[in-house]
Image 1: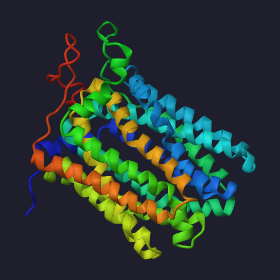
Image 2 (image 1 turned 90 degrees about the vertical axis):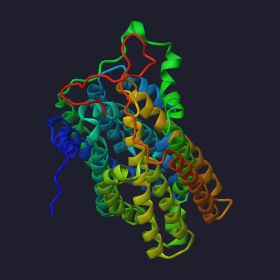
Image 3 (image 1 turned 180 degrees about the vertical axis):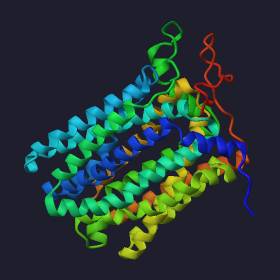
Image 4 (image 1 turned 90 degrees about the horizontal axis):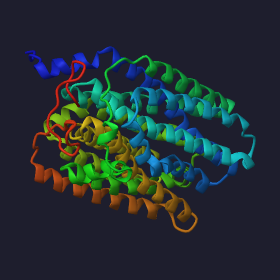
Length: 435
Protein backbone atom coordinates (compact mmCIF):
# COMPACT_ATOMS: atom_id res chain seq x y z
CA UNK A 1 0.00 0.00 0.00
CA UNK A 2 1.38 3.40 -0.93
CA UNK A 3 1.79 5.99 1.79
CA UNK A 4 0.32 9.43 1.33
CA UNK A 5 2.98 12.16 1.16
CA UNK A 6 2.84 14.59 4.07
CA UNK A 7 2.65 18.35 3.44
CA UNK A 8 6.19 18.72 4.83
CA UNK A 9 7.64 16.09 2.47
CA UNK A 10 5.80 17.64 -0.49
CA UNK A 11 7.14 21.10 0.39
CA UNK A 12 10.67 19.69 0.73
CA UNK A 13 10.54 17.99 -2.67
CA UNK A 14 9.20 21.15 -4.31
CA UNK A 15 11.94 23.25 -2.73
CA UNK A 16 14.66 20.89 -3.96
CA UNK A 17 13.29 21.34 -7.50
CA UNK A 18 13.44 25.15 -7.33
CA UNK A 19 15.62 26.87 -9.98
CA UNK A 20 17.96 28.33 -7.37
CA UNK A 21 18.71 25.03 -5.67
CA UNK A 22 19.10 23.29 -9.02
CA UNK A 23 21.71 25.84 -10.08
CA UNK A 24 23.47 25.48 -6.72
CA UNK A 25 23.47 21.72 -7.19
CA UNK A 26 25.05 22.04 -10.65
CA UNK A 27 27.75 24.34 -9.27
CA UNK A 28 28.31 21.93 -6.40
CA UNK A 29 28.81 19.12 -8.89
CA UNK A 30 31.50 21.00 -10.80
CA UNK A 31 33.35 22.07 -7.65
CA UNK A 32 33.24 18.56 -6.24
CA UNK A 33 34.67 17.24 -9.49
CA UNK A 34 37.59 19.63 -8.95
CA UNK A 35 37.86 18.72 -5.27
CA UNK A 36 37.90 14.99 -5.94
CA UNK A 37 40.70 15.43 -8.46
CA UNK A 38 42.84 17.86 -6.49
CA UNK A 39 42.53 16.46 -2.97
CA UNK A 40 44.46 13.33 -3.93
CA UNK A 41 46.65 14.21 -6.91
CA UNK A 42 48.28 17.09 -5.04
CA UNK A 43 49.49 14.71 -2.32
CA UNK A 44 50.55 12.06 -4.84
CA UNK A 45 52.34 14.71 -6.90
CA UNK A 46 54.37 15.88 -3.87
CA UNK A 47 55.15 12.25 -3.00
CA UNK A 48 56.39 11.62 -6.56
CA UNK A 49 58.40 14.85 -6.69
CA UNK A 50 60.17 14.27 -3.36
CA UNK A 51 59.89 10.55 -2.61
CA UNK A 52 58.84 11.47 0.93
CA UNK A 53 55.85 9.96 2.74
CA UNK A 54 56.02 12.77 5.30
CA UNK A 55 55.88 15.56 2.71
CA UNK A 56 53.05 13.78 0.93
CA UNK A 57 51.18 13.63 4.24
CA UNK A 58 51.85 17.32 4.86
CA UNK A 59 49.70 18.15 1.83
CA UNK A 60 46.71 17.12 3.95
CA UNK A 61 47.96 19.53 6.62
CA UNK A 62 48.18 22.30 4.01
CA UNK A 63 44.56 21.60 3.13
CA UNK A 64 43.60 22.36 6.73
CA UNK A 65 45.77 25.44 7.18
CA UNK A 66 43.14 28.00 6.02
CA UNK A 67 40.95 26.87 8.91
CA UNK A 68 43.04 29.25 11.03
CA UNK A 69 41.47 32.23 9.26
CA UNK A 70 38.00 30.76 8.79
CA UNK A 71 36.40 33.06 11.42
CA UNK A 72 37.38 36.03 9.26
CA UNK A 73 35.89 34.32 6.22
CA UNK A 74 32.68 33.73 8.16
CA UNK A 75 32.57 37.39 9.15
CA UNK A 76 32.87 38.37 5.48
CA UNK A 77 30.15 35.87 4.49
CA UNK A 78 27.74 37.47 6.97
CA UNK A 79 28.51 40.99 5.73
CA UNK A 80 28.30 40.69 1.93
CA UNK A 81 26.18 39.00 -0.71
CA UNK A 82 26.97 35.32 -0.28
CA UNK A 83 26.17 34.57 -3.90
CA UNK A 84 28.67 37.17 -5.10
CA UNK A 85 31.24 35.95 -2.58
CA UNK A 86 30.97 32.40 -3.93
CA UNK A 87 31.25 33.64 -7.53
CA UNK A 88 34.40 35.65 -6.79
CA UNK A 89 35.95 32.84 -4.75
CA UNK A 90 35.42 30.18 -7.42
CA UNK A 91 36.97 32.52 -9.97
CA UNK A 92 40.00 32.97 -7.71
CA UNK A 93 40.32 29.21 -7.40
CA UNK A 94 40.32 28.73 -11.17
CA UNK A 95 43.04 31.35 -11.67
CA UNK A 96 45.26 30.10 -8.84
CA UNK A 97 45.47 26.57 -10.27
CA UNK A 98 47.23 27.91 -13.36
CA UNK A 99 50.38 28.39 -11.24
CA UNK A 100 50.80 24.61 -11.14
CA UNK A 101 51.90 24.65 -14.78
CA UNK A 102 55.18 26.17 -13.52
CA UNK A 103 56.08 23.05 -11.50
CA UNK A 104 58.99 21.23 -13.15
CA UNK A 105 60.75 19.29 -10.39
CA UNK A 106 61.41 18.84 -6.64
CA UNK A 107 62.61 22.42 -6.21
CA UNK A 108 59.15 23.66 -7.24
CA UNK A 109 57.28 21.63 -4.64
CA UNK A 110 56.62 24.85 -2.70
CA UNK A 111 54.37 25.97 -5.57
CA UNK A 112 52.22 22.87 -5.07
CA UNK A 113 51.95 23.62 -1.35
CA UNK A 114 51.10 27.29 -1.99
CA UNK A 115 48.36 26.42 -4.48
CA UNK A 116 47.08 23.76 -2.10
CA UNK A 117 46.59 26.40 0.59
CA UNK A 118 44.81 28.77 -1.83
CA UNK A 119 42.61 25.97 -3.16
CA UNK A 120 41.67 25.01 0.40
CA UNK A 121 40.98 28.66 1.22
CA UNK A 122 38.46 28.66 -1.62
CA UNK A 123 36.72 25.71 -0.01
CA UNK A 124 36.52 27.31 3.43
CA UNK A 125 35.24 30.60 2.01
CA UNK A 126 32.52 29.03 -0.13
CA UNK A 127 31.43 26.72 2.69
CA UNK A 128 30.85 29.73 4.95
CA UNK A 129 28.89 31.52 2.24
CA UNK A 130 26.90 28.49 1.08
CA UNK A 131 25.53 27.70 4.54
CA UNK A 132 23.63 30.99 4.63
CA UNK A 133 22.69 30.77 0.97
CA UNK A 134 21.00 27.40 1.52
CA UNK A 135 19.26 28.75 4.60
CA UNK A 136 17.78 31.60 2.54
CA UNK A 137 16.91 29.31 -0.35
CA UNK A 138 15.09 26.40 1.31
CA UNK A 139 12.42 25.83 3.97
CA UNK A 140 13.37 24.01 7.18
CA UNK A 141 11.81 20.69 6.22
CA UNK A 142 14.02 20.48 3.10
CA UNK A 143 17.30 20.97 4.98
CA UNK A 144 18.22 17.37 5.81
CA UNK A 145 17.28 16.17 2.33
CA UNK A 146 19.31 18.98 0.74
CA UNK A 147 22.37 18.18 2.85
CA UNK A 148 21.98 14.51 1.99
CA UNK A 149 21.71 15.27 -1.73
CA UNK A 150 24.76 17.55 -1.78
CA UNK A 151 26.74 14.97 0.19
CA UNK A 152 25.69 12.23 -2.22
CA UNK A 153 26.93 14.27 -5.18
CA UNK A 154 30.19 14.87 -3.35
CA UNK A 155 30.66 11.18 -2.71
CA UNK A 156 29.75 10.14 -6.26
CA UNK A 157 32.76 12.12 -7.43
CA UNK A 158 34.91 10.77 -4.62
CA UNK A 159 33.98 7.27 -5.78
CA UNK A 160 34.56 7.72 -9.50
CA UNK A 161 37.25 10.35 -9.83
CA UNK A 162 40.12 8.73 -7.88
CA UNK A 163 40.00 5.72 -10.21
CA UNK A 164 39.80 7.89 -13.32
CA UNK A 165 42.22 10.44 -11.93
CA UNK A 166 44.82 7.81 -11.06
CA UNK A 167 44.65 6.47 -14.60
CA UNK A 168 45.05 9.91 -16.14
CA UNK A 169 47.83 10.79 -13.70
CA UNK A 170 49.84 7.66 -14.54
CA UNK A 171 49.29 8.07 -18.28
CA UNK A 172 49.77 11.82 -18.73
CA UNK A 173 50.86 13.36 -15.43
CA UNK A 174 48.98 15.90 -13.29
CA UNK A 175 48.56 18.85 -15.66
CA UNK A 176 45.51 17.60 -17.63
CA UNK A 177 43.76 17.07 -14.29
CA UNK A 178 44.75 20.54 -13.13
CA UNK A 179 43.29 21.97 -16.35
CA UNK A 180 40.01 20.13 -15.79
CA UNK A 181 39.81 21.33 -12.18
CA UNK A 182 40.45 24.97 -13.16
CA UNK A 183 37.75 24.77 -15.83
CA UNK A 184 35.32 23.29 -13.29
CA UNK A 185 35.85 26.16 -10.88
CA UNK A 186 35.28 28.64 -13.71
CA UNK A 187 32.00 26.95 -14.70
CA UNK A 188 30.86 26.89 -11.07
CA UNK A 189 31.48 30.64 -10.83
CA UNK A 190 29.29 31.29 -13.87
CA UNK A 191 26.50 29.02 -12.60
CA UNK A 192 26.40 30.55 -9.10
CA UNK A 193 26.29 34.03 -10.65
CA UNK A 194 22.98 33.03 -12.31
CA UNK A 195 21.24 32.18 -9.02
CA UNK A 196 18.45 34.61 -8.18
CA UNK A 197 17.12 34.84 -4.62
CA UNK A 198 16.39 37.31 -1.85
CA UNK A 199 19.30 37.07 0.58
CA UNK A 200 19.08 37.88 4.27
CA UNK A 201 20.50 41.39 4.64
CA UNK A 202 23.46 41.80 7.01
CA UNK A 203 23.02 43.50 10.35
CA UNK A 204 22.78 47.26 9.91
CA UNK A 205 26.08 49.05 10.51
CA UNK A 206 24.77 51.07 13.47
CA UNK A 207 23.54 47.86 15.18
CA UNK A 208 26.78 45.89 14.92
CA UNK A 209 28.85 44.89 17.91
CA UNK A 210 32.65 45.34 18.27
CA UNK A 211 34.66 43.42 15.67
CA UNK A 212 36.12 40.89 18.11
CA UNK A 213 32.68 40.18 19.57
CA UNK A 214 31.18 39.65 16.11
CA UNK A 215 34.01 37.51 14.72
CA UNK A 216 33.79 35.15 17.70
CA UNK A 217 29.97 35.01 17.76
CA UNK A 218 29.96 31.73 15.84
CA UNK A 219 32.05 29.99 18.50
CA UNK A 220 29.84 31.22 21.32
CA UNK A 221 26.71 30.10 19.50
CA UNK A 222 28.12 26.62 18.85
CA UNK A 223 29.34 26.00 22.38
CA UNK A 224 26.34 27.52 24.21
CA UNK A 225 23.53 26.04 22.12
CA UNK A 226 22.50 22.48 23.04
CA UNK A 227 23.01 19.97 21.55
CA UNK A 228 25.51 21.75 19.29
CA UNK A 229 28.05 22.21 22.09
CA UNK A 230 28.41 18.51 22.89
CA UNK A 231 28.28 17.46 19.23
CA UNK A 232 30.96 20.00 18.37
CA UNK A 233 33.23 18.61 21.08
CA UNK A 234 32.55 15.06 19.89
CA UNK A 235 33.45 15.88 16.29
CA UNK A 236 36.43 18.03 17.35
CA UNK A 237 37.98 15.06 19.18
CA UNK A 238 37.14 12.59 16.41
CA UNK A 239 38.32 14.80 13.54
CA UNK A 240 41.54 15.56 15.40
CA UNK A 241 42.18 11.83 15.63
CA UNK A 242 41.48 11.46 11.91
CA UNK A 243 44.45 13.78 11.34
CA UNK A 244 46.72 10.92 12.40
CA UNK A 245 44.96 8.69 9.88
CA UNK A 246 45.59 11.27 7.14
CA UNK A 247 49.27 11.43 8.02
CA UNK A 248 49.46 7.63 7.84
CA UNK A 249 47.73 7.31 4.46
CA UNK A 250 50.81 6.67 2.34
CA UNK A 251 52.34 4.40 4.99
CA UNK A 252 49.18 2.26 4.98
CA UNK A 253 49.34 2.02 1.19
CA UNK A 254 53.03 1.25 0.69
CA UNK A 255 54.14 -0.32 3.99
CA UNK A 256 50.93 -2.04 4.98
CA UNK A 257 49.54 -3.09 1.61
CA UNK A 258 52.69 -3.01 -0.53
CA UNK A 259 51.11 -0.79 -3.20
CA UNK A 260 52.40 2.28 -5.04
CA UNK A 261 51.40 5.80 -3.91
CA UNK A 262 49.21 6.27 -6.99
CA UNK A 263 46.88 3.62 -5.53
CA UNK A 264 45.84 5.88 -2.68
CA UNK A 265 43.02 7.28 -4.80
CA UNK A 266 41.57 3.97 -5.99
CA UNK A 267 41.79 2.42 -2.52
CA UNK A 268 40.22 5.48 -0.88
CA UNK A 269 37.40 5.59 -3.42
CA UNK A 270 35.58 2.76 -1.63
CA UNK A 271 34.58 5.37 0.95
CA UNK A 272 32.60 7.07 -1.79
CA UNK A 273 30.38 4.05 -2.41
CA UNK A 274 29.21 3.74 1.18
CA UNK A 275 29.08 7.51 1.63
CA UNK A 276 26.57 7.66 -1.23
CA UNK A 277 24.38 5.25 0.71
CA UNK A 278 24.85 7.38 3.81
CA UNK A 279 23.92 10.56 1.95
CA UNK A 280 20.76 9.01 0.57
CA UNK A 281 19.64 7.69 3.97
CA UNK A 282 20.78 10.52 6.24
CA UNK A 283 17.59 12.61 6.05
CA UNK A 284 15.43 9.66 7.04
CA UNK A 285 17.75 8.72 9.90
CA UNK A 286 17.86 12.30 11.20
CA UNK A 287 14.06 12.27 11.30
CA UNK A 288 13.93 8.85 12.98
CA UNK A 289 16.84 9.00 15.42
CA UNK A 290 17.68 12.66 15.82
CA UNK A 291 21.05 14.22 15.04
CA UNK A 292 22.89 13.33 18.28
CA UNK A 293 22.16 9.63 17.86
CA UNK A 294 23.10 9.68 14.18
CA UNK A 295 26.42 11.38 15.03
CA UNK A 296 27.04 8.70 17.68
CA UNK A 297 26.38 5.83 15.30
CA UNK A 298 28.45 7.49 12.60
CA UNK A 299 31.53 7.99 14.78
CA UNK A 300 31.25 4.45 16.11
CA UNK A 301 31.31 3.16 12.54
CA UNK A 302 34.39 5.26 11.74
CA UNK A 303 36.28 3.87 14.75
CA UNK A 304 35.51 0.30 13.69
CA UNK A 305 36.49 1.12 10.11
CA UNK A 306 40.02 2.20 11.04
CA UNK A 307 40.85 -1.09 12.79
CA UNK A 308 41.52 -3.18 9.63
CA UNK A 309 44.25 -0.71 8.60
CA UNK A 310 46.33 -2.18 11.44
CA UNK A 311 46.73 -5.32 9.31
CA UNK A 312 47.91 -6.00 5.77
CA UNK A 313 44.74 -7.33 4.17
CA UNK A 314 43.58 -5.27 1.20
CA UNK A 315 40.08 -6.68 1.53
CA UNK A 316 40.00 -5.79 5.22
CA UNK A 317 41.20 -2.23 4.56
CA UNK A 318 38.62 -1.78 1.81
CA UNK A 319 35.80 -2.99 4.07
CA UNK A 320 37.05 -0.73 6.84
CA UNK A 321 37.18 2.28 4.57
CA UNK A 322 33.62 1.50 3.58
CA UNK A 323 32.62 1.88 7.22
CA UNK A 324 34.61 5.11 7.46
CA UNK A 325 32.77 6.58 4.48
CA UNK A 326 29.38 5.52 5.83
CA UNK A 327 29.98 6.70 9.38
CA UNK A 328 31.66 10.03 8.69
CA UNK A 329 28.96 11.05 6.22
CA UNK A 330 26.20 10.24 8.70
CA UNK A 331 27.98 12.16 11.45
CA UNK A 332 28.63 15.25 9.33
CA UNK A 333 25.16 15.42 7.74
CA UNK A 334 23.53 14.96 11.15
CA UNK A 335 25.63 17.69 12.71
CA UNK A 336 25.33 20.18 9.83
CA UNK A 337 21.55 19.75 9.70
CA UNK A 338 21.24 20.39 13.43
CA UNK A 339 23.60 23.37 13.21
CA UNK A 340 21.72 25.05 10.38
CA UNK A 341 18.35 24.57 12.07
CA UNK A 342 19.55 26.07 15.34
CA UNK A 343 21.44 29.02 13.85
CA UNK A 344 19.86 32.38 12.87
CA UNK A 345 20.33 33.28 9.18
CA UNK A 346 22.54 36.31 9.88
CA UNK A 347 24.90 34.12 11.91
CA UNK A 348 25.15 31.24 9.44
CA UNK A 349 28.49 32.27 7.92
CA UNK A 350 30.24 32.75 11.25
CA UNK A 351 28.88 29.55 12.78
CA UNK A 352 29.84 27.57 9.67
CA UNK A 353 33.32 29.11 9.77
CA UNK A 354 33.66 28.42 13.51
CA UNK A 355 32.75 24.81 12.82
CA UNK A 356 35.42 24.59 10.13
CA UNK A 357 38.06 25.98 12.46
CA UNK A 358 37.13 23.83 15.44
CA UNK A 359 37.07 20.64 13.37
CA UNK A 360 39.97 21.32 11.02
CA UNK A 361 42.62 22.93 13.23
CA UNK A 362 42.96 19.90 15.54
CA UNK A 363 43.04 17.70 12.45
CA UNK A 364 45.69 19.95 10.91
CA UNK A 365 47.81 19.90 14.06
CA UNK A 366 47.66 16.13 14.46
CA UNK A 367 48.35 15.60 10.76
CA UNK A 368 51.56 17.60 11.16
CA UNK A 369 52.44 15.74 14.37
CA UNK A 370 51.67 12.39 12.76
CA UNK A 371 53.75 13.17 9.67
CA UNK A 372 56.71 14.11 11.87
CA UNK A 373 56.36 10.93 13.93
CA UNK A 374 56.21 8.54 10.98
CA UNK A 375 59.98 8.25 10.85
CA UNK A 376 60.16 7.56 14.59
CA UNK A 377 57.27 5.21 15.37
CA UNK A 378 55.36 2.52 13.49
CA UNK A 379 52.34 3.98 11.72
CA UNK A 380 50.16 1.40 13.46
CA UNK A 381 50.76 3.19 16.75
CA UNK A 382 49.21 6.30 15.22
CA UNK A 383 46.23 4.26 14.05
CA UNK A 384 45.62 2.91 17.56
CA UNK A 385 45.56 6.48 18.88
CA UNK A 386 43.17 7.35 16.03
CA UNK A 387 40.72 4.64 17.07
CA UNK A 388 40.86 5.71 20.73
CA UNK A 389 40.23 9.36 19.81
CA UNK A 390 37.25 8.62 17.57
CA UNK A 391 35.80 6.31 20.22
CA UNK A 392 36.08 9.11 22.79
CA UNK A 393 34.21 11.43 20.42
CA UNK A 394 31.48 8.83 19.97
CA UNK A 395 31.13 8.55 23.74
CA UNK A 396 30.56 12.30 24.06
CA UNK A 397 27.91 12.19 21.33
CA UNK A 398 26.27 9.15 22.99
CA UNK A 399 25.96 11.01 26.27
CA UNK A 400 24.29 13.92 24.49
CA UNK A 401 21.96 11.54 22.60
CA UNK A 402 20.87 10.00 25.91
CA UNK A 403 20.29 13.46 27.39
CA UNK A 404 18.19 14.86 24.56
CA UNK A 405 15.98 11.76 24.13
CA UNK A 406 15.30 12.67 20.52
CA UNK A 407 13.92 16.09 21.45
CA UNK A 408 12.66 17.89 18.31
CA UNK A 409 15.02 20.64 17.19
CA UNK A 410 14.10 24.26 17.81
CA UNK A 411 14.51 26.46 14.80
CA UNK A 412 16.67 29.54 15.20
CA UNK A 413 15.57 32.73 13.52
CA UNK A 414 17.12 36.11 13.11
CA UNK A 415 16.57 38.61 15.92
CA UNK A 416 14.66 41.84 15.41
CA UNK A 417 16.64 44.95 14.66
CA UNK A 418 16.11 46.34 18.15
CA UNK A 419 18.20 43.67 19.89
CA UNK A 420 20.70 41.60 17.90
CA UNK A 421 21.23 39.18 20.80
CA UNK A 422 17.71 37.71 20.95
CA UNK A 423 16.31 35.09 18.57
CA UNK A 424 12.50 35.11 18.13
CA UNK A 425 10.83 33.82 15.00
CA UNK A 426 10.91 35.81 11.77
CA UNK A 427 8.59 35.74 8.78
CA UNK A 428 9.30 33.71 5.70
CA UNK A 429 11.55 35.21 3.02
CA UNK A 430 11.03 34.83 -0.70
CA UNK A 431 8.28 32.30 -0.23
CA UNK A 432 10.18 29.93 2.06
CA UNK A 433 10.84 29.66 5.77
CA UNK A 434 14.27 30.03 7.31
CA UNK A 435 16.43 26.96 7.54
